[in-house]
Image (cartoon, rainbow, N blue to C red; front, side, top):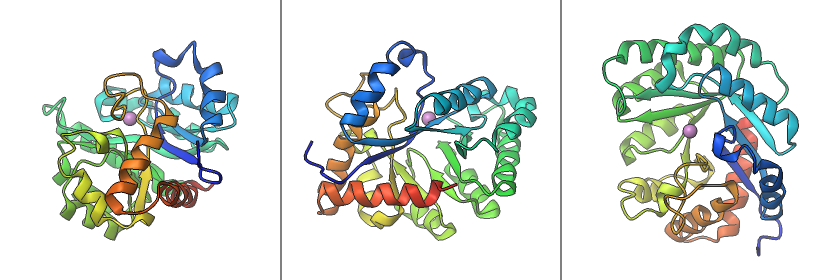
Length: 255
Ligand code: NI
């Protein structure tokens, strides 16, 4: 790699996923060699949040986010236990939390209730949030405007107009492998319109691998490909993309 002093901060991954279970001890040093300096691995329910903490305790470069994903809101009663994890020294965010109307529309009210409760928690502990918004742009924006948390909308898929609204609240936009897809839709326009100082890089590993690895298992060092695409869109160097987004993440997730 030619990035002498530019490092990768993967702000959203799922290294507790079963596909990584046996490979992580070799994968982590490989990724470090390729420039990966920090990774946030996210919880999706109580069990995976506890796993995220365990990984953060085991590996220096891993930090944890804990929370209940909108796909798991039947676990809403686990929030009291989730709250206990927030004081852990390597827990740097509440996430991933949010709304997903792609998978389920029949429990919108419950999704909204659990999302709001976790936004309250984040504000109470002064922690940033990692927000999941799939096919729920209007409700997500309305709720974020009300709670004004610190944080990032991960795998941002909304319009330029929505992006601008989120920036006004102070939020960051998380960008990953989708940027390299042929059907990236709004995302290149959003990246072009958004100041680099408000963008974060992420994988969502093991999902959303960038081209030419689309469909295969994602990993944090593949962020180089996303940074390259972002640099091309913005007409700047990849080094500048990596450096600035790294600093953005450091600013947001400092504890
Ligand atoms: Ni995720």
